[in-house]
Amino acid sequence: MQSRGIAVVTGASSGIGAATARRLAEEGFHVVAAARRSERLAALAAVAQGRITPVACDVTSDTSVGSLAETVADLGEPLYLVVNNAGGAHGADPVASGSVEDWQWMFDVNVLGTLRVTRALLPALIESGAGTIVNVVSTAGHIVYEGGGGYTAAKHAQHALTGTLRLELNGEPVRVIEIEPGMVKTDEFAVNRFGGDSGKAAAVYSGVAEPLVADDIADCIAWCATRPHHVNVDRLVVRPIAQAAQHKVARKL
Image (cartoon, one colour):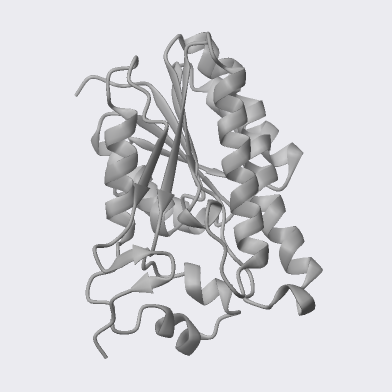
């Protein structure tokens, strides 16, 4: 298979990030899989037959992201794709009792993490002559709901960052694509949000016959990224058929 060049995927140790790394490797990219948990990245790379390079990276650290950029440069291939997937939610408290620590974490990872990685890798994307940035945002970037103040605020900010970046890069050879998943059932997202409470996490998906899974979102990312470069999918909203809107979910209990 002819190489498509380098693709960087953040948050690649689990869930959507891991699924995306695997899928892009299958599509012919040399994937740089970046995340904090190096042991999981090593396991991911072990089954990819040399198509995935694991890199320990914390997107909340300027130094760590700088090291990621150096690793990409050292590989000696053009960088064509960056998938800003690292993110997540902590807590479901109302605004009146919201945890500043949780809000800080959500903004640092979802918003500033996207900024750090984009800023560090954008020169290489421009130099490639055919770069693509895919930001994995959320339907929460447009709709608010009770108990979601911190997460929806962070995703609204990430959505605003994405749209602003597209305007600022107009005329440069870099596409900016936004993927907005609705209800996606992964091993960790809801569990992490509720502090490890598996019961609360399971209740999110209770009675939903077929929520989306990580591979569904990886498929959307791969499709957008492999369109002819003059085609820019500005924004792709994807939900399971059971979810008509953020607040409207069919459940069979």
